[in-house]
Amino acid sequence: MIKNLIFLYLISFLITSSFLTIKIEKLKNEIEQSFRYLSDSIYRYQINTINSKVIYGTKEIENILYLTKVKNDETVKDISENFSNFILDSRRNEIVSGNIWTVANIYPKYMFVEPYRKAYERIHEHTDTDNERSYFDYLVGLENIEVNLEKSNLSIYETMKVYGPYTESDTNEELITIYYPLYVNRKIQSILLLDIKYGFFDEFIINFNKRNFSVIKKEDDINISQMIFDIIAKNNYNDKIHIPVEIEKKYFLVYSIFVFLFFCGWYY
Image 1 (cartoon, helix red, strand yellow):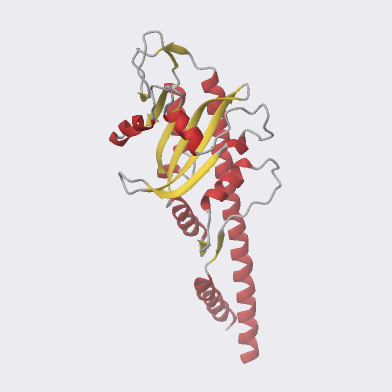
Image 2 (tube, helix red, strand yellow):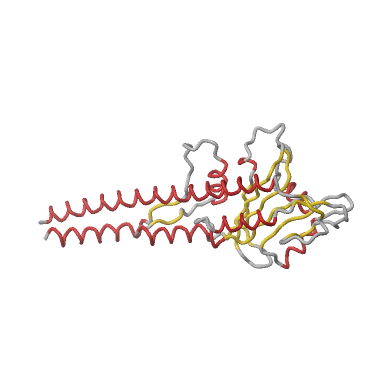
């Protein structure tokens, strides 16, 4: 009888191991595909903004914040409709969905931002009107963003930057920021910025576990910013990306015991 019990537990252990290995691969695939979909949304948005109509900046435009004083003959790209559609599309993306904190498209003299927060009025602190340097120039220098790809071998995807996690001083929200430069004729036109709540990754794993009856967690030594960059920037679809998730060991044993008890009830 003892031999039979040992045999049943070994079978239970192997079944549990195989089941959770399949689930962890499924989770990794969902994480990667969700970020690839986000990348596709950004690319479609870029194409749409290139062809946006140009209007005089003195006209009323939704979600716009001027970084410098607007002149009567100043023209701006009216991307408000494309901007709103991109935000809706991003919020439908499973991995970031309700965790998008801010979306902004920053041009040298103005920016579109949603939602608008009082703290954004201090963006002008980074503007040097005497030398015609704005918040856009500040970000380019701060994040070392490529302004001209003529002499660069970088792909469009490799020009992005991912920063964080960090805590936003005004709200104490822990965030990760994706800076995605948008280029026309290989020269920078604007910077698309996405602030995402740092807890998005934990939330996605928890929801996955509920749907799949699995016990998976993020690794202890984790660099989510690097993971996001690696997924979006990779050129070859078959390149392996390290997704920092693993089976929760303390629950693995409990899981295998439940399977073992099931087999015991069935066997005896």
